[in-house]
Image (cartoon, rainbow, N blue to C red; front, side, top):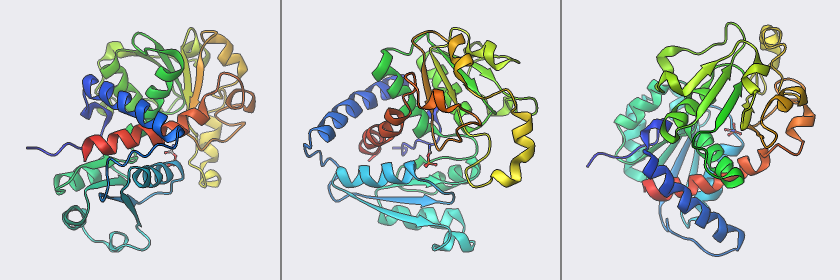
Length: 299
Ligand code: CP
């Protein structure tokens, strides 16, 4: 039987997501009530990080521990991957010692090669092209707060990045619409879009993209820690900040999400991220619950 991986959002069907969300709700309740839920007793997750992380590492490591298993952290600094060991060889070895693997790496081609050589399931913890675990938590969070996401409108305000491409795949699977507004020069790469064209609309003006939206979401303009190298981006993104004026264009019940970390005063105004429509802390917490359901399902 073929091994099931989660490398892109579109790797799972609607039925699979519905099952995962049902499990995630149950797991969340057990977690909140301090009830044991050791469904992965004696199982091992290896986490490979070629890029920095707070939420992804913490949610996978804590999640595996709470499920009764163990999580091992590797990075390129102190593993042979950083010294040129081929990913194909690393995948062969890791998958003989562990039950499941999570990788945060650069190109999607790297994770695809890794998965092709693994005997156990591989989860995408972020690549340049996709961030499926984050959008899994985001859709779960929307449903938790507002009910079904079917037929709703998500406004994406920012550059076309891994989050947007995963949102577009989610729109195709769940049946919602994405209003996309990207600054000039940071627009969608059609080769990375698998969603049907009817699932999204591109707007030149970010305020127009927010009109009537049920959810407004954005991401950092410059990666945390690389601010000095990205002065040009700040200029190009002028006007794309999600502030209260843009939130007023959205549906009065609209939610605000951000995958974090955030730069207040750049992509989002403090009054929005710290305001009543923001669900960013639930969104971050839900990484834990949905990924525990994902680990359980794949193992
Ligand atoms: N949102 C997210 O993936 O956060 P980290 O980079 O901290 O893992």
